[in-house]
Image (cartoon, rainbow, N blue to C red; front, side, top):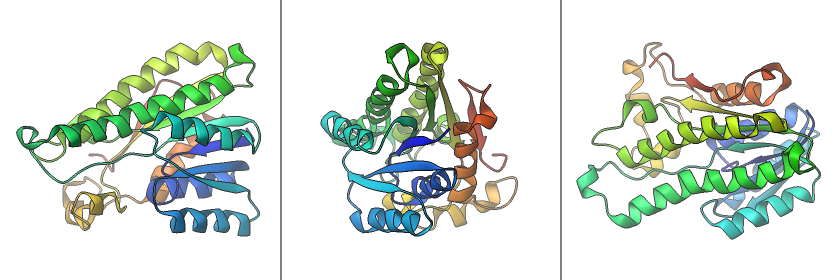
Length: 247
């Protein structure tokens, strides 16, 4: 399914791994980033060097106007056929009774509203009921949605629980309009999101609690995401796949 794929948070970690694999699969890649222009431009250059086509667009997915601008930039590349809702944030460890409202509002705005804003724009372009040609959406959730992340990141876990529900509901809503919607629930993955929570070595430190006794890689998550985006998953919608090493 060639065309343009929009990948939020596409400059690093799982998003960057998805961008690389999407380009290899024949997509033109429109990747979003919030602040790391150097990493985003590096990913665009890497895709171009490998014979692909990519564009980096700065913006905060929690800002409705930025999301509209992102998809307008994608339209300039061609027909949008896919969305990977990858952008997400967490904060430092805290109990719920220690969380200020500003933290909660930011987590929910980026992780939940950002996914809604992006999916809305993608559906408007891909739905056969609106003149589109169909497509696929994959939402990035987290094993924290099942585990709760008590005394750590209950706010993050709750936001990803909302994504699980959103994935199921949207999938049923647009199943008859040529759009498949699925989710991927990563577990302990070695990316720099842990550094933003103040624990850069978290993945390595927790590997022993994973049944397979190691942390996962961004590439392993991206492989699952791109399978769900592909025609090989043509009869899969409304599902969320755990990529957790058995945890």
